[in-house]
Length: 147
Image (cartoon, rainbow, N blue to C red; front, side):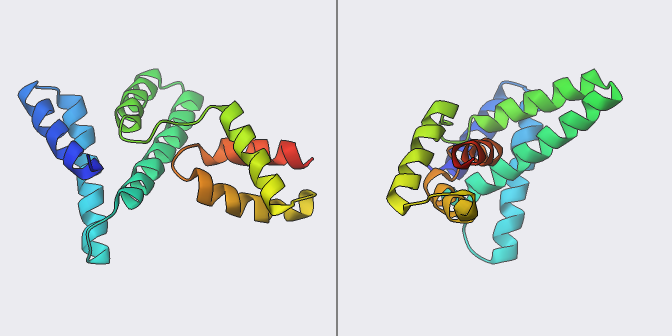
């Protein structure tokens, strides 16, 4: 099922179930998608919707980090719940070992030999692992493998 259709179904279910927090997160996500569609004047593909979800999750991660530094545990808890809700719309995330295996395969395919070709590795990794793994993890493992 397309993510936007699933989102509509889940919004209705959240309204019927009177889940205020979940409904707020889903409506906010839907509004971000609609706003992007209006800006680009076209319907978004699943990949583009995944990009919006991923950026929203990154924003939540950043705000949780700031809230933790400030000692605002209630806001960290709220953002963590929102993040969990959004993660349900992403494809299954690869484990670190699966990312490591994929990166090793890219290194062999492309003939990458050292740190100077880091950009080439990241370009291949982004194309192959887009939406399947966190960019920070990909970057970290790529640096380890090329070191």
